[in-house]
Length: 162
Image 1 (tube, rainbow, N blue to C red):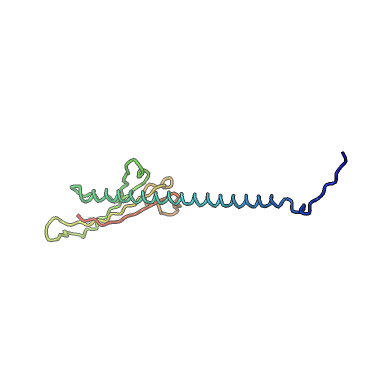
Image 2: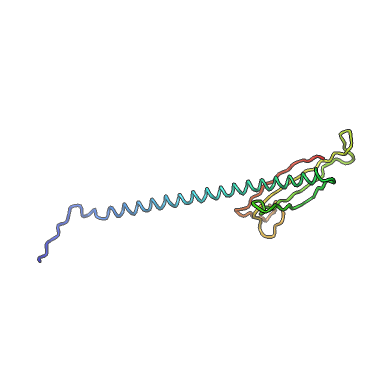
């Protein structure tokens, strides 16, 4: 068989244009997927932080209830200068809850006209989680403390009268 000369089409210089379009499309799709994954990961991280913050608030409120019980319900009020309160097993168990109590009662016998004497206490409760090694009490904000990304802290203060 004799060689037949190939005829070149006039558009032969445009060969490979579809390959470039496919590569550009792949790059765009990959970029959109990476952006979507980053956005999803950020949203999940924010959601987890929000849940931890809500649990810290619950732990602080539980510590405040414990402190009020110590002051109002017990026959002899217990005003601990510094007390760590263990949370029950469950979602609040990893939290460290520190209760501080100060007796702000005026000196002498301050009464409202009738015995018994009125006492005024200040309760400060701090709940935190993900403390660095070696830190026992909340708050852990003493320099050179550098909080971890998962560190969450909530504080409450209240006056209690008895």
